[in-house]
Amino acid sequence: MITSVAVIGAGISGLTAGYAIRKKGIAVDVYERSHSISEFGAGITLSKNATSLLDNIGLLSGIAKNAYHPMKSYVREYKSAREIASVELDESFISLDRRDLIDTLAMSFKSAGGNLNLDHEINYVNASTGDLSIKDRTKNYDLILICDGIKSGLRGQIYDNLEPKFTGYVAWRGMVRADDLPKFQGSDKANVYYGPGGHIVHYPTGRDDYINFVAIESKSSWHEESWRTEGEARDLLSKFANWNEGLVHMMASANKVYKWGIFQRSLPQKLFMGRSVLLGDAAHPMVPFLGQGACMAIEDGYALAEIIEGCDDITLALEDFNKLRKNRSNWIQKRSLLQGRFNHVSAPSIMSLRNLITKAVLKRSVSGLHSYELDRELKAIRKR
Ligand SMILES: Cc1cc2nc3c(=O)[nH]c(=O)nc-3n(C[C@H](O)[C@H](O)[C@H](O)COP(=O)(O)OP(=O)(O)OC[C@H]3O[C@@H](n4cnc5c(N)ncnc54)[C@H](O)[C@@H]3O)c2cc1C
Image (cartoon, rainbow, N blue to C red):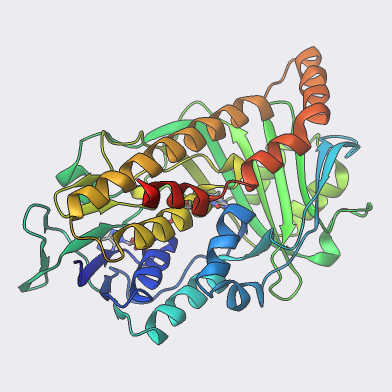
């Protein structure tokens, strides 16, 4: 039986997993290197495949309180903003400020009796014994969850030396007020604009009337030291200067813009080693073009809690986790990359073809992505 779990990293994967496991009556210590759980203010969308799981563990109502329900998503042409295709969404699709998501996860974890240790950077894990080096002492756990994000140093130490690679995409992000939205019908919903060599997304966050936008450009290299830096608005605007006027005005209204180099790291051979297991971006960081990175992190945490509940053999349980999560996250990682290529074609004839394909397949592809039922897969595992 697993009675004690350590979680390294208090991001979306670590806190979801920590909470879901704690709810099973298992003692959980989360270690986070930052002084505070202060997420960067930016938006995030969560789809049904993840929100249905949050609902099952009693977290959705708290999270959705601060969220927005766009109810519809439009794909538009970059210059005219003409609708190429649209899809109705239901209440299960939410957009929100990441700070609200992280705050609710952290508060719920603590209320459930979880132990959150801030200012605790973990640099050594003994995966065979379950020993964790914490400042000047060692503590032993039945299971250690490595949730330290895309740059995971512990993954490098225990699993493989695959370095994250720059994908050729740079994301610009900013927040504006609803008054700054382009003035056409539906601009207050979730919107994606396909252009030549780039795409732009915007949606409300539910926090006051803030709108989050992300503009993605293709770039051959990333020279900045950090993966996220404050960017120059004029650089952003010059990249997208010939896009829709309303869209350009919206981006120009942001007080600050940030830019991210988008990196990816292939999955390791196995998601577990000894008494350690990888979750979230530490296991499968992906380009954000399907809005699924955090959703995968939530699926991971939920799945692991269900699989280890009452298990007698940790290795068998982790084998099940690996089987279930490796194929799924590998597939979503690859599909996300493909979506980037699709979104960024630039020859006019191919752009027209892309728009026709989008019109034909958008509803089916969104529904296929959002309707994945992890619980059904878990039931199949339990039957074996
Ligand atoms: C531009 C952009 C837009 C996105 N939009 C969406 C979206 O709309 N929907 C969606 O589903 N996903 C989206 N994603 C992806 C999503 O943000 C990530 O997949 C998700 O945040 C991963 O969570 P995580 O907990 O695995 O990692 P992280 O959020 O990176 O958390 C890791 C945590 O570990 C801590 N840590 C690191 N090292 C140590 C250590 N040694 N000891 C202790 N603590 C440590 C860090 O401080 C951090 O708190 C987007 C990503 C980007 C870049």
